[in-house]
Every structure is written in structure tokens, then in C-alpha cells.
Image (spheres, rainbow, N blue to C red):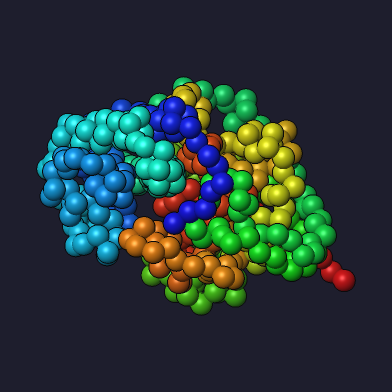
Length: 436
């Protein structure tokens, strides 16, 4: 579930609801109906499924149990658009979501409008007791939808990369070559003293359950790179046979790289001039040396760190460092602009004159397994399946990406993926021990 001490008035919560829901629809505008049906692999979902599933969440967990007289748009959608909530019932197979040619995109738009109208009516007319009861679940649903906004971009990028005719998701409205090609700052490391630090979300902000409860961790002194690893640094790793040297790799990573034929990050290709290019949301582009590297697995990040005579930071090191970043620095991070998402480059950008890249650009792999914090408890009911049941065999990423809505990220946020996955917007920041 969630924890939050944030209190909303009806008008503010309704305005936030409409803003978040509108952004999902805005992200779907560049897509044809055929685009929205594509599912290029089992890990990804069609765009229209994301639009429907986020709507299903509000209908299933708020309207059906709480809104008197509410009539479901289509009871069959309970089965079609359930993701992984076993307590809710059976569901359409994840790997076969791309077979759902029906319902149509138009019908899903009507579904969204139906649920939006019902939520607005509930927020407007609910008693004080009912409003207090549903407020937290609506806020959870909004942050859940923001997660799917990033997933929509991840998944459509992967699908379009497999289609030679679909050369871009959206053209870049602001593609300043001066900034994009400017050199990143030379790599330096900042020493952090560590100590006994508070880890986890406070009671004064929204948080997912996996960020709680707040607790203390002992963090030894460490050094953290002041910026993300760049494409140029990754090319140096490739040219030094980084993908061919088993001594750099974890055993599972080495076997995965051999089996999958990895020799570069996902979407990278060598063109006829022996120049590296990469597929982006704006189309295939020549690799820009000073952009942060993106679409790497945990296995690749770990091998690169070892090659660099460094390591990945623990998630507690990362969070303790991020806590020193002020709100102004977070706001300056390259995150998804929720008002005008297409006015800025949908791709990682160089560090340039920013003090750090702690927030935005790419999710940063840590060396920490995704596990429960001390005294973590799963919430009762189906909504308790949100995060806790995935605490096995996955690794934690921190910091958000260029596709993470700006209002969605915070220092305590814990993202998680399997170590072999790399279609998400994932990159790396190096860490080092402080020698005694």
C-alpha cells in the first residue's frame, strides 16, 4: 500500500487527478491505433493496455467498492486489464496482451472517460468519511499511473525499434546540438562521510510501501561519482574488450551476455562507417559521446564498474547522498515535463554545468538486492500485492529518468528490475570505497 501524511482538499485532489490522467492521453497522441496494439516482447505491454489498466485500477479499487450505484463500464474488463492481482481474480496472459485487437482504442477512450467522470463525481459528493477513506487509494492510483506513463514510453520505444518503418515516436522539438554535444564534466568523486543515516520515506510525503518504514542504516565512508557514466566512457569499455573478458563479469551475467550476444547497450548498432548509432524515441541517431549511457543491464553495469576499478553504490549510499541534494537541484533534474512533455528531448542529456545528476536522465543501478526494510508489513487485501511480493531476485535502481514525471520522484524512491533486463531507461553512477 502506501504511507502518506499529506492531506488533500477535494479540489486539489481532483485537479491532480485530471492532470495525471490527461498526461497519459497526451503521451498516446503521437500513436496510431495500430501502434497502440503492438507488444514486442513479454516484458512490454501495448500502449492501449497501459491506458486501460490504469483505468481498471481506479475502477477496481475505488469505484466498485466505494461508489454507491456505480456501474462498471464492461465487467469483462476486470479480466482483460488485471495485471498481477491474484486476489482480484484471473487475468489475460501477460505475454498475449498484444493479441487484444479488441476493445478498440476508441472504446478504451470511452472507458477512461466513464471512470474519470465517476471519480470526479465521487470526489465532489462523497461524505467527509468516505473522502477520507478513498483519498489515499486515489493518490496511490495516480502514482501508479505515473509509473505506467514511463512504462508506455519504454514499451513503445522497444516496439518501434523492431519496425524499420516506424522511425520515431515523436520528433524532437528542442534538440540543441550545442548542448547535446557539449563535453560532460571530467569525472570526479565526492567523498561522503557516511555514518548512521535515516533511510526511507518520511511521514510528510507520499511513498510506496517498499520505501517504508523509515529506519537507520550504518553507511561506511564512500565516494560517489558526481555525474553519470557517459557513452564515450562506455565505448572505451567496449574497445577494451569489456564484453569479451569473463573476469569482469558475474557468472550469471557472463552466461546471459554470451547467450544473448551482447556487445553493446540495447539499441546500439555500428553503421557502415563503423560509427555507433542508437535508436531513440526521436529515431535512430549517432551516439553522442557525452550523453549518459542508457539501456544497460545490472550485469553490464557491474562489469563496467569492475573494469573502472570502482563499484556500484549501495541503495543506502545513494539515498544518503541524495538527501543532501536540495529541492532546487531535484527540480533541475532532467525529468519528464508534465505540462509539455514533447518540448524537451526525451533522452538522457550531458551533465554540463549541473552540480550533479542525482535525479533524472537515467535510473541508476545500485548494488543492492530488492528486499524488505526492517519491520516492513504487507497491507491487507489485494492492494497489498503492489510491491511486496516482488522482493526476490531483483535489484534496486534509484533517481528517476528523463521519462519519469517530475512530481513522481523523491530521494527514497525504490525502483526494481531483474538484473538481465535493459529495455528500461537504466544507467550507472560509479562508487568507490574510502581507504582507511
